[in-house]
Length: 167
Image 1 (spheres, rainbow, N blue to C red):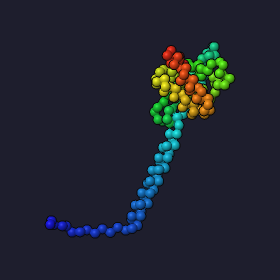
Image 2: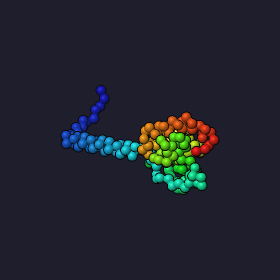
Image 3: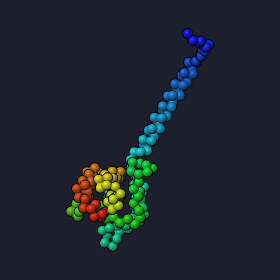
Image 4: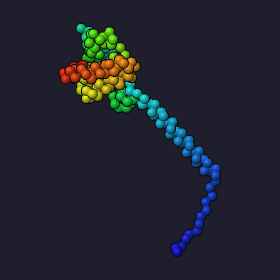
């Protein structure tokens, strides 16, 4: 058998153990609170502001006078679509027959401009542009029936505008 050194006895006060456990509990509560705050700050995508538009002489197209941004995921995520001043849009391309149900102007206005911008620049795939359009309409509070009607319309007929790079 080998040589053993002197045994050391250590006394621990039960109060010290309770203090450590209390500290651990507090840290866990703080961690949970922090996670909640982080989650709530990422609730939804957002627009930075409402766009300023100027109509052309025909009234069919509009120029974005002041740029605006659409933040995907959450503000500060770094995933941003910036529609620059000077961008030309036709707003929502709604056939005349359907305008009594879904007008060109409405809650969906900003989403339509972002969608036009994505179609013109082709900075994302057509599917992604359409999905962003749907998400942006939700952010703006467009009723479910209306946003899905518009979404499926661009999914079915948007290929022509995509092909020609026209918003």
